[in-house]
Image (cartoon, rainbow, N blue to C red; front, top):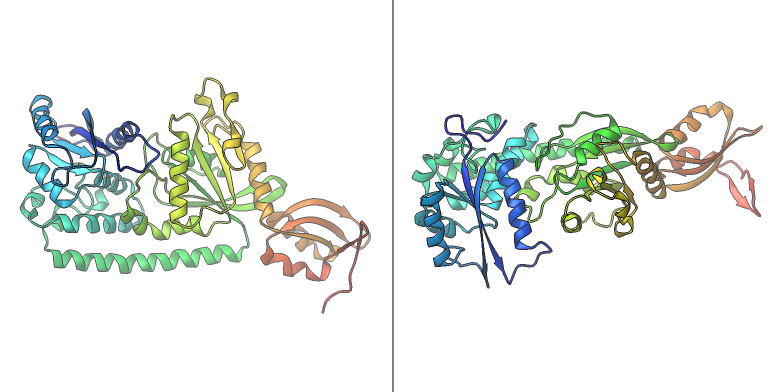
Length: 445
């Protein structure tokens, strides 16, 4: 497990935020600072205090006002913290100036999120993605700080989460000591490797598309219960922890919905407010699972006081990915944590179903809603399949949604919906509607 230093225990951290008049966010500064605390604890820090300053805009030199910087320096003497985490992205000069004024390391929200990703990346793809984002972020911050950085502890991504100080895990001290030219070379190498990974993932998606199975991507705010719900629907064994970003690497499983309709269910990385742009870019191949999905299954933690803000944050990321208009089913999760689950209003969300993934409540209703929305994306078909083509009857059941089935003298009548890619297989057996009666057209050549 991460984030406890073997000799001194967890790092003592102090959290800082500025409430600016120019901030354009649904989140209050207090809520964002509370989330920063959850992130810091996920990284293994011991949070010993928090500070919030109201300013018209952050100070360009030190982010905080001069008085608050002095107050923070005094608090460092009193509380003995060794790490200060800012709930915003600091400029390189702000970070340097703050570290000169404080007897503590200074990192920002982006560095903290990247550190957590470094801990949880397990696959080669995930490690490459995290290393790329970290090096791109650190490169402009190396100027004038080479000696300081070379003295900081670090470790390779292969041992992510084992010892080390928060915010410097990942590439490790050996990479922080090399010059900018070698870092740029490493960035170019990472981009080439990730492009190969992206091509492999694209190939896998094409192979899945050849199966003509609809793809449902599970999306949601981090720690909303996505992996728990994914496991409950697919009988998978994806890691589940009560931590932010417990899982990063996408997992895909075949799931059978009501009516024997088959879909591919894909678990994806959780979203968070102000998700670093570098991270979105680095995880492009992973997030393309969302872009290429036929239907989105959004998981919302309705027990969270910021459930609406979290859902809107998910929408913002989906807009950035140009996936916000995809058909969606919403799982209003964790109702077992509510004192009165009946007070949840599903009408606030598209195609919403109230569930508890942990308790298994509402899962059948969710499967039925998924089957309905998936079927709505298919083409309607009425076919009379000869008994000699039982394989087509079985395919219709597995890949489509059967609404009516009759066994007639000429064959099996099937009325329902099917992926458009499969419709051609049934062209010779399609029926037409006339005056309320089904009739067989002439067989096409």
